[in-house]
Length: 419
Ligand SMILES: Cc1cc2nc3c(=O)[nH]c(=O)nc-3n(C[C@H](O)[C@H](O)[C@H](O)COP(=O)(O)OP(=O)(O)OC[C@H]3O[C@@H](n4cnc5c(N)ncnc54)[C@H](O)[C@@H]3O)c2cc1C
Image 1: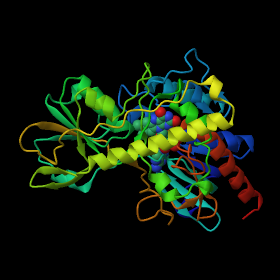
Image 2: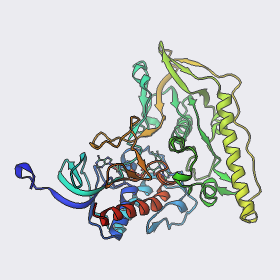
Image 3: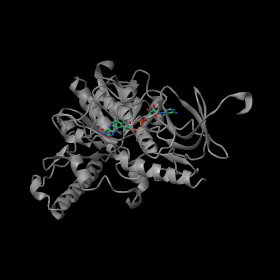
Image 4: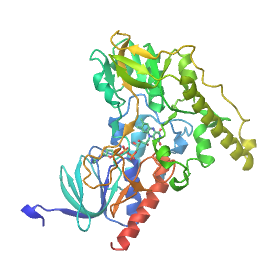
């Protein structure tokens, strides 16, 4: 009994977060008969319910949506799930795996004790020997510091605030960031009739299909997504890689910068600074495009080589090469935000995790967990669902099974050793 006579619940393992990662942890903990609970501040699949825009579909095809003991079995394996379908898919996984989820339970602090961890929630305190942090890698949108200096006449939105184009006033939109979120929102806002300018930094260009197959079929079958964290040359860089320019479009259309420019989107360089109410963009779009094109070409060569050496050439179409990204004849290097041309800025500049509740010194100065394949420096503390945690596919739905199995195996070993 703790001081003050408050009862503290005891359990072997606490999992924080009931997204697919926390639920996968629960699946393997149950398999090992380890008593545990999953604490969730909202509901199962909360991020998909509260933090995504209306038109979003998964960019991973349905056949790739699989979790331990649960996979997509509907009539459209090549389609892409809507948000409603993703929520249903994850809810069903929670039901099938019998996960013991405590919804509306926010973890307010996590502290180490002599023999385990003390978890304080809005609904009481729990002591446990081990913890799996599966609270997500994308809890907050990342926005540059200078956003606070944008003139008040220009509205600002992040992907967490954005639902659909009707929310924006008429007039020009500056979308900042050309990864999956930025290209998708730029396309949707252009279709709504608004003039869109897209600020483009380093990005990953991918066609939706290659040689007749979804490009993610190639990523998976050729073994790229399975590459392990300890085989990746520059792990820090791999963990920071932006999401690819893909959209889960039922027509399987490619959404690269050429496609966007063809619909009238104006491309400018990375938004580097804000001075005297002017957005200043980097020059050198030509180099940024050339780098993305080069990486794409190398990736396609890897696919071709894999098909050839694995005797798969006959089952796919012949190799294709795509036109280089077209460099606009002239690009603006600055934009006066007082002129009224831009009415809204949409920050599609990435996401980051949020560990304000974590009172264990395992967070680096950049706000990321320090870990080795999901094993943290504090004994009995683990993480799942972070970029390239154990493999390149770690943050994707289909990537969790292998990671969760191995991380929970480690946890089981730790408990068995009685440390
Ligand atoms: C815009 C976007 C599109 C994506 N598209 C795809 C895709 O097409 N295919 C794919 O495979 N992946 C996609 N992903 C990547 C990934 O699948 C998702 O980010 C997914 O939500 C990650 O699952 P998770 O379980 O790791 O984290 P989350 O789903 O974020 O789950 C974490 C849970 O922890 C809870 N939580 C956080 N802090 C606390 C706390 N202190 N106390 C209690 N609970 C807490 C949250 O409420 C949340 O429910 C996408 C990601 C984003 C951002």
